[in-house]
Amino acid sequence: MTPNSHPLPNDRVLIKGAYLMTQDEQLGNFVGDILITDGRIAEIGRALHDDHARVVDGTGNAVLPGFIDTHRHNWQGALRSLGPAWTYQEYRSQVQIGLGQHFEPRDVHIGNLAADLLSLDAGVTTVRDESHISNSPEHSDAAIAAHWESGIRAVFDHGWPSTEAEQWQFGSARTHPDDIRRIREEVLSDDSARVTLNAMLRGPELSTPEVAAQDIRLARDLGLRISMHVGLGEWGAEQQAIRQLAESGLLGSDMTFIHCCTSTDEELRMLAAHGATASVASALEVFMPGLGQPATNRLLAAGIRPSLSVDTETIVSGDMFGVMRAALAYQQLVIAGAAGPMDRVPDLPVFDAADLLAFATIEGARACGIDDRTGSLTPGKEADLIMIRLQDTNLLPATDVAAAIVAGGHAGNVDLVMVAGEIVKADGALTGGHAVLEEAAASRDRLFHAAGLPLPA
Image (cartoon, rainbow, N blue to C red; front, side, top):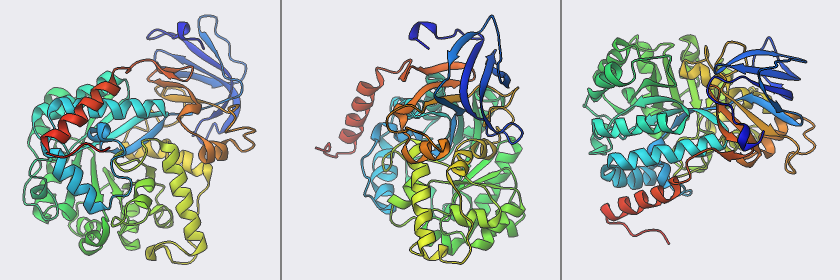
């Protein structure tokens, strides 16, 4: 496809001769064609023909659902790669406590936009934006506006402020900001839209049990799915938030639990029994001391197929290729008996590259509650898809396509990205966002100056 052949909204697009990795159990993987009309997948098969469609030659390419990142703090997008060697406490001190209080709405907007554009470039078509920068209604509105502007599919998880950050975590008695009601009623009331609303709650690990119960009731009264960080280092092991929720009757299938690094095996089985989902931020969890190790294998043992997430770009790269590789690398430590103490148990189940692609697509859609519209190449679903060049030097000869993508893939191999039928990357280049670099640098400089910090050399 050439830049001049980008389809207009509601045009018909026919991708021919690609290796389709559908993530649909009924369809499987095969070389074939996919027809997109009115932003949706109309048909999948072999030898499809449509005289009115714009044809894309998929020969030598893999087409799969767009990656789904189920947990990213998008507001930190302009603070990218500040501390790859930070501990958990250093990250909290430097970013959440140190810089977060100085964010203006314009900084949130550019941070979210920078994170969205990097995501799209690397084939992430959906992001669950864990937004604990709700310093004011204007901050939240700026974050949401960036998602609309970028073209990504976003689940905006309204969280708490990063002003007085220490008062909002680890035993906090403050209830969730009431502005979530305004957003639900006036800003993101349509659950079928490209940008939708969830609730990012602190739960009994970061707030008191009474506040956790009140916040959960609020989210459910508003008809919102819930995300919650649990199993954070030694504190998570002491609090056992999942157990608290189960014993209080609050644990439910509308919840996604993030990290679970130090949650017990029994707690993970409780998640499975209640139909809850999980998000593993494997790259961050292996990079950041003090948080714990990826719970991927333990989740599988409990009966949960997890989703995957980046978490914060201040620590790790914002693409899913690195997340998948980190999960696989840590599994090799598990197999070798060199993993963390919670993983040193016999007969833990293992996963492979094909599983990782499923974790990064259909399982992410399930965790976000949007698997009815995305996450697989299924006729009737919205056309969120990516095309990866298998003939690029780093992927040749792609003997096992899933293994090639997981072991060697990167953003440069992503040739085409489509969200709800709209092409946002074509011929390996994003279709917009060229001014973001300068704006992100200006935001970073402004934030460092406000916090009285010297700019890194």
